[in-house]
Length: 531
Image (cartoon, rainbow, N blue to C red):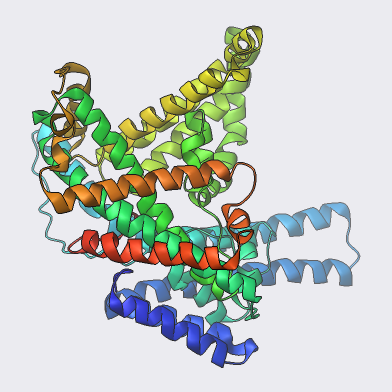
């Protein structure tokens, strides 16, 4: 059921009506039923896997909590020595850890099997060929279950939080199933923590009228991003990726910029649609973006882009590796040889390499995504190692106080990220490197706009109008995010007279109807749904 389809729009309207017809305490059941309908629409067979995930996660969390509660009750009922308490804690911790590992093995095993088995067999055959052996014939015809990357990570986060005592286990299986399968976030996130999402997911509280209005406004804004900007630009970037070798280097670079704008409009547009819709239901989702194109460095960019995924990797991969005893020992070993700064930087460097390898592999089972992840990690590692030197130079020259320097840093970060984002998208990893090579080697000067942007087909009136509308909306998006430095855009909008608000919203609807629908004919779905 594609998000831009009539059937999905009908689902949204139907859920909204039924949600407020049901008593407050039963409204979460409407959300669960809608989630199951949405998931069943992608194929009944897929439901088996999400039921396996929810059942194993529910059982493991309940067992871990029962062990922890039993330990507290046992200590309260019995007078034990410190040594006896320690022995009980060690034994119970082993039992809880075994339960956690078993549940993780099942769910990570499902994720790895469906998402990475073809890639693994391909690499095995390559190695076997190099060694003179025979490869394995890949006869598997697997369909990756809808949203498995997102609901598996969200479920793992819940399990680890229960294990660490950061949240209580959900006692109602069907409520947990809703947390795992909640349809607005199952295909593209955000990856919410149980503690955050459960506050509003089960309450069924009717939001104030202001939330209904603001949620609808945000929903329309998201449709504009996806339909008017992303879908129009996707037609152009698809042509660019298929023929980049025919264009001047500056044209290819501009195409990479357009692709990054398309990706942002597509992904953040989905988030606005779903966050706006959930706000109308009184459910709060985790925010996934914070003006990423105003970041002045690659590390800052990734703190602003896909925030929920970054938080997940930071909490469950980076920090555990960063503070592990074996990793901290590496710092102590190199301290006498390389000094204090190197000793402090080495443990986080190791953690960053592992984290960004996993981040790239999570995005896609290909060397393009793995290398993309490692390149991002290397830029962040360089920032870490060079930070003291940069601070000294910056303080001496007062560079950060100068607008032009800050603007340069923003443009530099945008360029780096744009070049990295296209690397796995052009085709193979070799195609990605050839795409980069074209930028730095083909310095033919275009003779005009049509030669500068040949993949836009400016001679086609309809496509020209669509492209100009996309660029105009992208400029509007930039202005809105620039204003958001001081306070939320909706605060500015809410301060306007009501007739002017109605006029602007009507103009937004007309913009979507005039350009978005045409740009969306034959367009693919949301890009992050592929992950």
